[in-house]
Length: 441
Image 1 (cartoon, rainbow, N blue to C red):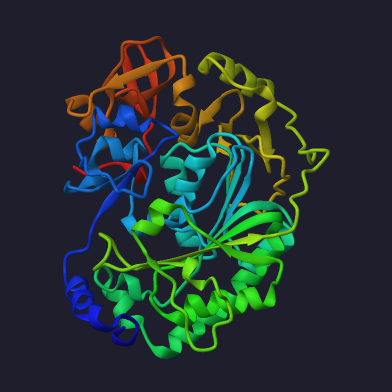
Image 2: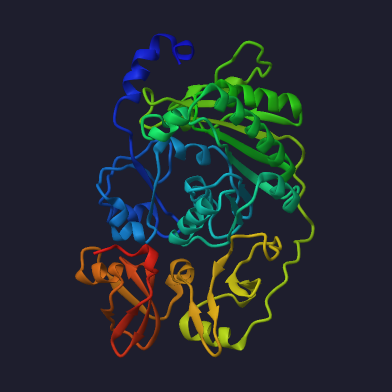
């Protein structure tokens, strides 16, 4: 770092011994930034290069009802930059290859909107479960999570995606001040191992990318072997790619990529480095790689087999929701889901596909938490609570609450935003908030 930073090194050393900067993003799939500002208790100072990003000034944010309702995603500020560096169209297909815990995935989906498709992959099952849980909490539609290696992704989805995020596993130098594990696991040998793995992941990303598509490469390390050297080698191996500038606002709050001895990429300065002594946040590197081939628009959309709909399911949906699109009902295995992507997801290839509607029993449907979170605004029965009410504490503890609505399945909301579900019977709402998400007394 002394060699990289020269006279700036003392400032850097002081910064990495300082307190880590916390931040959060507004989940714009559930609430607009303008509406959230009216109820925001977490801190109002904006992150200049992140649309809907704020510096966090609140203790135990994870217990707040707004967090449970998926109104926000807590994330280190510099880690929000990569997803701001790429253009996304509403009907794009986006892949996040190394996605857990889900910060960049959920940010990409916010930019994509309800249209388009997001596939988020995480190779470690326990981390894929966390990734899936965050997508569920934020109520995001048309998402698929997979739990496999990137070589398998290349087999499943050749020449498919318009945008691919490669938030590559790295030596973690940029996380030293917030993660002691990153310090204990660091070694020069690990840097080299990470660089080899990153090269492999990038090669598989190329196979998944459609012509004219974009790869965003990111790490949370300062190591040139994992950053500029990785990009330089990639561009040498792939002359049909070029490194392109990031938005000006991101440039203003980051530093140029560093040219090293033997670097052949004349535009390596277009890559961006985030340092804790320069920007409020941790270490981050990002480079945007554009495929220069002409984008080919498919003349015919791929056929996705629609579900043979069980009448019990239709009765449930008609009784429960004000609006839904029957054409979006899809069977993933035996599970009915809402999914409108134009890619067939075969049984066994996904950890989660679309929004799970529920489990069909003999003569009724037991709705899934995902349905309440993603389609809560469409529920006929609503129980709206305020964030400081006794009832919302009871609900998050898993207790019954009073309900002033007809019998049947209802969505519980906070400030009008879906929080979970309940079964109403004679003025009492039986709690269906998942046990694993409840706040312990």
